[in-house]
Length: 458
Ligand SMILES: *Cc1c(COP(=O)(O)O)cnc(C)c1O
Image (cartoon, rainbow, N blue to C red):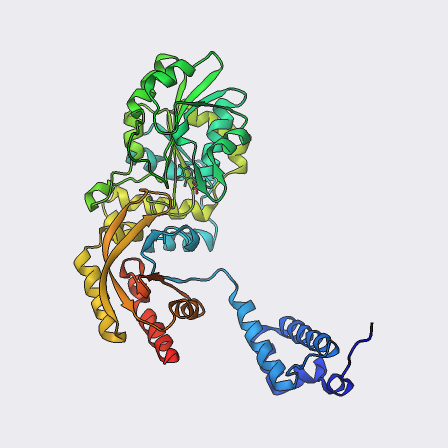
């Protein structure tokens, strides 16, 4: 195969040495370090050479190469895990990191993460302590549990619970609760992974106490309730109340386990939402163990929390998987700080997720109107969503800043390239911004970015 080669253009390419010793190259080295700058320039030169040999025309003079290197190095240094402004109105947005942490939780992460700590040290005894002890007292005080255990996330909590208590035995679950939560969490798969045998009962839409009762054999370990999280059945539907599940379980000497999913410690019904079940209610109803997430409606760090009977929690703590799933010191620090907000009765003011849920519509509307006065557009009614697999279909009335732009798709793509990126929604052909999920300290920046994007449009 003959290859087209414009030898002049190839010969005219600057050398890596020439580029890095130029003032522009020196500036890149100063800013990003020698190895990244040299690697990037070498990569760009290789690329230019390949393209020129392939007969393409490429701007490969020193100044274009240095410009392209600067863009590449900036992106590399910035990384891909970066803060964004969430103007979608979805409060627990799984793709955008779920719950933002409170100031106290962040301060605790900084204090514990930046130095040595009592992670596994008992100050009184001057000897080894347990990392699991830190959140346990608070979790018991808040939920009424005898004991508690924290692992990496709720998926791990569920696997640990089933592997410890039901490996090689049967776990009975209603067909209506065999859900996929997202991110690959499917109840039947989790069950198989933990070594328990799933026994499906009832039908998709109706499961009664008698169905549970009939399925119990001498090889049954537990009846399990799984919160259907992100979907909702309407119409001819019957779920067995959890008090009936726990009664049947205990009448037959098997365990009652609860994968509660979100696990709100406060009642969402006080804010015009449906009632999201609370862990304390599950325990009162007789559940032996309840598992829930730390970064959904709890509003803390990613964590899986297990509360319930002391004897069971102790067995879970001794299982080898508890070691494999153990939570990190920064998680534990943030979780304790978050739980303290509930203990002190200040969750609504201090925990961002709850501040957003409780924010009065009038205040959201005033913010949208203030934005409209700065960048134009209008204020329209809409809905914020709780999200994160909590409260399926649960929405809060909100007020949105709505912009008419020539191409909503291009406009939202430009917003995503801003620094910080802005994630907005398109509704009825307009680009809309929900003040409910924009953190107060991000408001000015958001308006600046919208203003600039509108200008580049015209
Ligand atoms: C979200 C959820 C999980 C998974 O929890 P993670 O903390 O994301 O691991 C498990 N079960 C239910 C019912 C859920 O809603």
